[in-house]
Length: 119
Image (cartoon, rainbow, N blue to C red; front, side, top):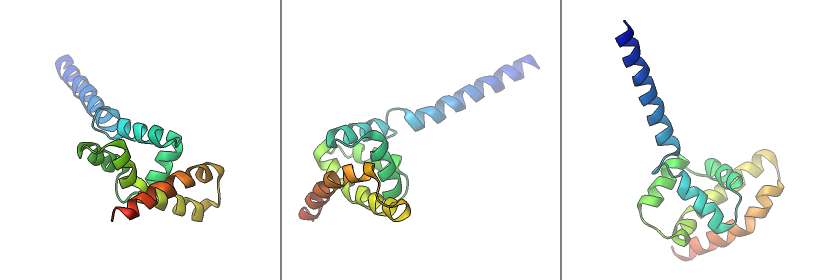
């Protein structure tokens, strides 16, 4: 009986470790997103809030795929610009103009203009 409880406890610990590794570990996109936010001068909270509301699908998977494609921070910033722009539009439609979005708007607009030039 004690042996079974030990095995179950061990499996629960492994499951928790896997959960947190996928969510916050290398390859989750989180570290790459933090670097993108810092590179562009957008506070992390604002960056992730815009991205969550602008990306189609999972923002973590999107960031992880950008990281795996070995783009530079400049290239990834341009690639992520349409999603950030959609995030601003959606959040402003829902909550109106907010100071934290206003500060990010010129940065996102510059990146979006670069994105559109490359098409």
